[in-house]
Length: 293
Ligand SMILES: [Fe+2]
Ligand SMILES: [Fe+2]
Image (cartoon, rainbow, N blue to C red; front, side):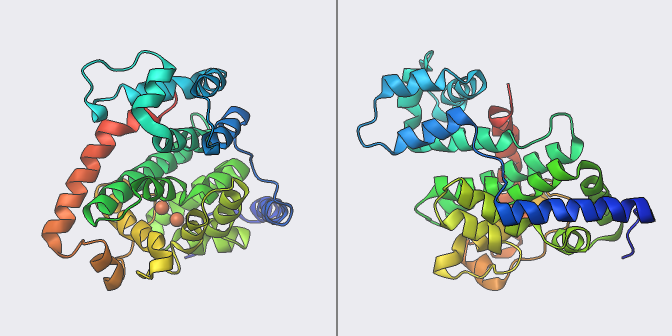
């Protein structure tokens, strides 16, 4: 489809953006994990973790500590006496869930406040994360937290596009709505690269488990059910479910390959309808927990 962007001024702007992203890729000039989050993530790895110290550090970031407390008090844990301080919250959550919340918060810091494309992308990312956790659990995948994080991060490269070119990227979204197609193709057309590569680089920079950047890189191109790459297949299945739950991001998600559908037990209309219903419900119940205070 022909671009709806007006000509010379736009092509100049696109050249600039293209150079900007080339620079980002070549020089690794990518946003860092916010300072407190980075320190917390490091501290969680320490086998001799001091919880009191960890809580002191968490309380340096009001938004983050508010989020930790809010999640620990959520109905998901069904506690008769929900925690009312950080130490109790950390105890309820455990370190893996804390790790997820800290990373969710860091990822949210890449969203532009009040920008509709950014908000839509955040909602989509969270929906895919929730869908992946749900499908992973259903299929007996051992690491639901890893699945959740891979979902949350899968389109992080697009967050970088929104930051670098808010108007141009919003127009790409509109073009998708009108003309269909795939975002990665539009991104190549506009920037000579797509969000999977930028996403992978950012996630490597953030030192996440190798499986997560790999899934971000492959989620549009290599989505079989290969054991070493199964999270990319799970992303494709979750994107499909989220699209049906009206939690997609501009493009219509293609039907995933048969092998991925089988691996993640989504065969048949009934299984799909149930997953769509469960994901919509999880999103309604949990999205507020991960949004900024
Ligand atoms: Fe994507
Ligand atoms: Fe996506």
